[in-house]
Image 1 (tube, rainbow, N blue to C red):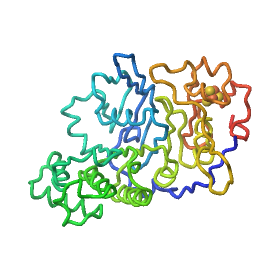
Image 2: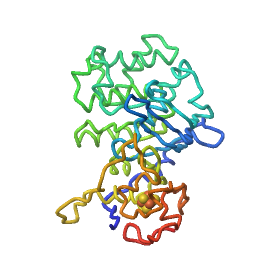
Image 3: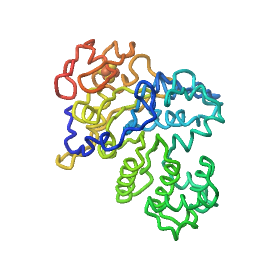
Image 4: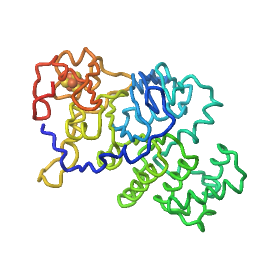
Length: 362
Ligand code: SF4
């Protein structure tokens, strides 16, 4: 199982340097620092273990790619940051979400109303469901500005038109409704709403999945430009390594509600260490190789109501040995800037010495 990710170009090196450092950050230098977050949903059928000890951090100006299959817990983690987990059935059981030295898990809903939309914004996957179908686009942007900034309705509208201009929607179309726009334009309106109050943190949840390929590229380019223009830190949720290569400077691989590997873009793309990460890279089609079938990781993500003991990836892992099924791997630091992996191989606890067709980085 050789890792072959050369077909992906990393053209984002130095992206952190592009963004000027933000003044507001926690004492530890992080804008956002999530520690051991546990989110469960208590349903009539049982408890859904959606997020299981998530650790994630983001410095001002950084873009973090949160990568994983459907059901890994990416969106639930984002909704937890936004304070949008419906309770019941959802519950944030434990952990901390430290944003600029404040634990968001301890603040009241009225405080969250000041943070959501102004400090932290989110771009949802489907722009049609994110927008209000019976409001003009200019009114939807103005509403956010009026809610968070002390400006008159007239000033808010002028600012909204300015935002439409920034996302390249002509002012003449400001009084139109969402259904009168194409998918790409609707997503640009959503981006304008998200950036209208110049948030410190933008969470983009698969923002281009609902768009066709050519529009995807335009929207991504625009998001990258705007991120630099507004000095916004970003969490890019995606299952597409092409998007990660294009936009991110750090990457966290999520599986069954936890981060199994994280590091800089370069560390993950050039020295992927976890068998799941390597499997994801191997599943990317390579135009230079003539193959009959695409590689796939056998099996499915475990049922979050019935997670395996030990390593969550053990039922699908080609390297699993007995201890993988009983003992949970701990975080292990690898060479590189903050490169971390959770796998017994790298702790030297398995007989396996080869991983991904090369010597394991033990
Ligand atoms: Fe595979 Fe074991 Fe590593 Fe889990 S701990 S990824 S099962 S080798």
